[in-house]
Structure formats: structure tokens, C-alpha cells
Image (cartoon, rainbow, N blue to C red):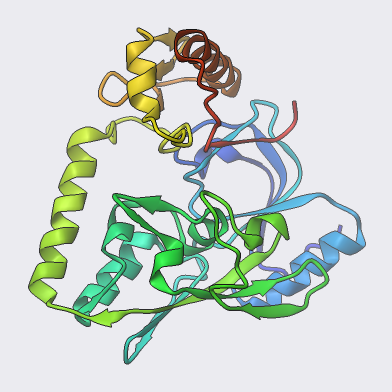
Length: 294
């Protein structure tokens, strides 16, 4: 493969170095474009050479196979982080962190993204999965997006055209890359916005096992239930498979106690799903994406 003019490229790069779970074997090509032009060039070249590829931001919602990923990973979480504000509109590139975007809005006394302050990861991934927390979701910010198709064309999508659903959107179903997103917010009281953000951040730090590597909430919330509560009631708090563990602090999280493997995480998830179904008759769906060679 021609590796010129597509950004920084590392071959056989260990994915555990760039994911929040700190798990994962090597990817064949780890590509970090520095400009939109390099990103488009990388996508077109990979498509032309029929090399499988995927996009990532901050690596917060994935667990990568111990065997790694065959093909390429394109990371946007370093060079696509610009945030611009004009009036009540906040525009952020796909690699900008959710927390930075929420803080930028707060500095301009704009309300509507307070919930995003406690969500790990980047704008691109959040738009892809309609990320949410504490009663808010990406769709609520009136967000529109610029999406890159695999053929190199760019499409601007309104909030309605993004077809947001619970942990899903057209970005995911159409396999788009979020180049940027724009949110239409409302004027608010800066002090109240900060107070709410502080409260949400405090709730996150006191109730979630942030002291350990993880991929955030492991399971989607089943309708009418809380995943963590079902897992706890099934007697699984603290259950371990090797160094993968159901968090004792919050049962909705599977954490890495030190040297967990992807296989241990997957086996633990399967054990939890089976036990919860036997106890409650509820099927838990994973929010975390398991990626790479099986």
C-alpha cells in the first residue's frame, strides 16, 4: 500500500495503546490524517486497494481482539479537534472531545450540552451512536453533521436526516465518517450551566469506576430496567474472568483490573448475559463494540 500523503502511519501498532480499555493486539496500519484532504485521500486509497478499514476517535467504546485488526484504523481523535462558536451555534470537528465541546458552550453561556460534559469520547463517535447520559442525548442538541462517504463525497445532514435512535443513527447505518457537527443551543445562565455540569461530573466520578480502564457502560439500557441493577440482583457484582471484572462500584461496567484480555472480557460479558436472562428473562445488548480478528 502507498502510505504517502495520508498523514502519520504506523504499521503493526498495538491498539491497547490507544483504547480506554487498554486491550488489543496490533492493527496492520494505524493512520492519523492531519487534514481533511489527507483523510479523504486515505479513505479512497484504502477503498481502491480493497483494504478493510474503520474509523475511531478517542477509543472509548471498543474492545479490540487480542489478535488485533487486519486492515487499517483511521484515528481522528488528535488532529480534528477544532471548536468554533457563532452566536448560538457550536461547530465541532469529529475528533473534539465531548467534554471540551460542552465546556466551550458553557463559556459562551449556551445551554443544551450540559449532559455531554460527562460523556467520554469524541463528537464523531457520539453522533454515530447518539450518545447520551443523565437524560440527554445527542439528538437533543439540534445537531446537524457533515459526513464523509466511502466514495469520498461529503454530505451535510440535518438533525432529522441523521435518523437518531437509541444508541444508533444514520451515521452508523450508512457507515459515514463525521467530519464535524453543529449544535443549535439556547442562551442560558453561565453559573447554572456550570453548576449542572459540576453535578453531572461529580455523579460520574463518584458512581463510575473511572480508576480502572474500561469502555464505559458495557450494556445498553433495557427498556424498563437498569442493566447494572439487573446484574447486581443476579449476584454478579465483582465477578471476574482473569483480569476482566464486573465493577464492584457500578455493575454496568466491565473493567480491566490490570492485564485483561479481549477473550476474558467477551467471556465475562457472555456469562453476565446468560445469568441475567436466567434470573430476569431480560436480554442484555452490548453497547461496547468488539472489534478485530476472531
